[in-house]
Image 1 (cartoon, one colour):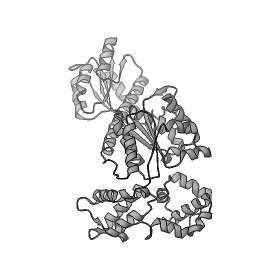
Image 2 (tube, helix red, strand yellow):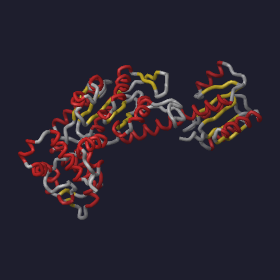
Image 3 (cartoon, helix red, strand yellow):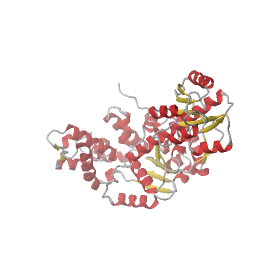
Image 4 (tube, helix red, strand yellow):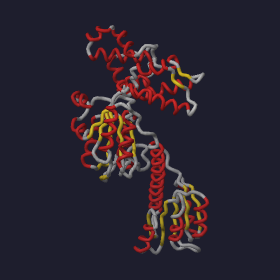
Amino acid sequence: MTSPRIKVLIAEDEANLAQLLDQFLVSRGHTVTTTHDGRTALDALRAEAFDVALLDIVMPELDGLEVLRQLRTEASPPEVIIITGNGTIETAISAIRLGAYDYLSKPYRMAEIDVLVRRAWEKKQLTKENALLHDRLARKDGVPEIITQHAPMRAVLTLVERVAKSDSPVLISGDSGTGKELVARALHRLSGRGGPLVDINCAAIAESMLESELFGHEQGAFPGADSQKLGLFELAAGGTLFMDGISELEPRMQGKLLRALETGTFFRVGGTQKVEVNVRIVTASNRDLGRAVNEGTFRGDLLYRINTISVTLPPLRERAVDIPLLAEYFLKHFGGVSHPRLSPEALEALQQYEWPGNIRELRNVIERAVLLSNDGTITARDLPLGSSAPAREATSAATGGDAAAQLSLADLERQHIENVLTRVHWHQGRAATMLGISTKTLYRKIREYGFQRPK
C-alpha cells in the first residue's frame, strides 16, 4: 500500500510560513494550493474539491472562522484544521462547534501538521465510505418482499416481523440459496434501527484478514497498515451486522467474536483502546451448528450466544407451491414486460426438479432460459436442469434403489459430492452451490475423500 496523496489548501497570511508549510506537505507527497487571504481561500475551496484545509484565523478579507462558517453550506466540504497564533479556549470552542476537525496554536511542529492532515483525511474518507454504504444498502432494501404461499415460510415471515424490533441475536439456518440474506435484510428493515445493515461472508475471507475486517486495525498494526481502519463492527454502529457462513469461523476467531458479543467491546488489531459499539448481530449458516458443536468444530457457548432467536428456512424442494410464483417473478425481472412464457411441460419440469441450489439455482435457470428463448415460449428443453429426468429419479437410478440403504452416511456423502463434481465438470463454485455448502467446505471434503481432478 502507498501513502495517500491528499489534496490540501493552505490559507496563511504570513508568506514565509505559508511557503514552509507548502514545501513540507509537498515533500510528504501531497498536492498543495496556497492562498494568503480568506476570500481567495473560500473561492478556491468552492471552485474545486479539497480533502483538507489549513485555515489561519487572522487573515485579510475573511478570517478563518468565517471561511469555516460559510463552508458548512457546501455539499462536500473539506476537513478543516484551524491555526492561530493567539489561541484562546473560546476560539477553540467556536472552531469545533463550527465543524473544524481540530485546532492548533502557533508555534507548532511540522510533524504535528502531518499527523493532523492524515487523520483529517481518514475522517473524510470514512464519511465518503459511509455515504456510499448507505446508498448501496438503500438500493438493496428496495427489493420486493419475500414471495411465498408456502404456509411454513409464511410462519417464518410472521416470526421475523415479531422479533425484528428486538435487539436479540438471530441465527438464520437453511440450505445455501434459500434466502437467508433476504431474511436478514427484512429483520433490519423492520427493526427501526437508525444505523446501516453491514454484511460479511465469513467463508469468503481469508482467516488472516477476517479479524481486521471485523474489528479494524490501528496504523502500523501489520505490514501495509499505513493508516487506521475501522472494522465492520464500528461501521455497523447503531445498525445490524449480518455474518453469513458463521460456521466457517476458525476457533480463535470464534473466541474473539464471543467476547465481543458478551461485553459489547473489542480492541482493534494492534490497538490498546477499548472500543464500545451498539450493534445487533444476525448470523446465518447452511450447516447444522448443533452437530458442529458435537464434532468439536464450533463452540457451544458461541452457539448459545448467537441463537437467542432461531429462524429456519425450508428448501425450495419443500416449497413446490412457490415455484410458479418465483419463476414468474424472475421471468419479469429478466425479460421485462414482454417476457417469454413457460410452457406447461416446462413448468412441470421445474416443479418436479429437486433444486439442490434452491432459489439461487432457480434464478440462474430462468435467467439462462430467458436469454436463449427464441419464439416467446420456454420449453422443458430450454431449461438447464442438468438432467431430463427429475433429480429424485436420477439419484435412485445412480445408487441402485435399495442398495443405497446399505451404504454408510459418509459413503453416500462421498458418492453424492463426486457425482455433483462430475456433473458440473469440476467447477467447484457451481458444485458448492448445488451441494448447499461453501467453497471452503467443498475444498476440505475434496481433500478428505482424496478426490483427484480428471485430466
